[in-house]
Length: 162
Image (cartoon, rainbow, N blue to C red):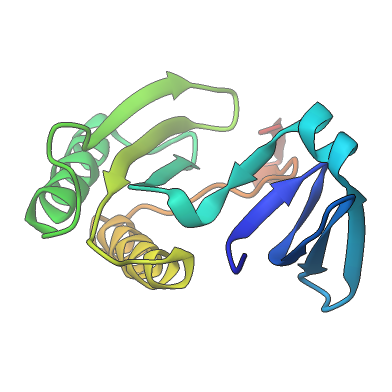
């Protein structure tokens, strides 16, 4: 009881475990009764028992980002992860993983571990890492690409960047 879980596709906090059903308070604060047979059939993902949190982001830079700028961003963000006291250094990596039509993609991959940390605390740390990453991108003179198709006019020629 009291654990934050996902059961049969429903996410919430376990409020009661009865003989025939489990009561789950959902994120929108309603209470759902899930029959124990359905719990056994679907299984339980218990978020409260996490020992680490997965930090994973794939960022796409604009297609015309120069390679030296990409290297500068990768190096600076890698340093950010290496200097964070709660990032598992054996898992931390910042890598150019793909060249797409939209632009080069950089992956941030690491596990966050802090004794007693919960999801909310992880999100605060992740937010700071992402803000620092965005700052590194801007400081390098680059920017993220838009997730939608883009047309660019250059001297009367239309270039489709989708």
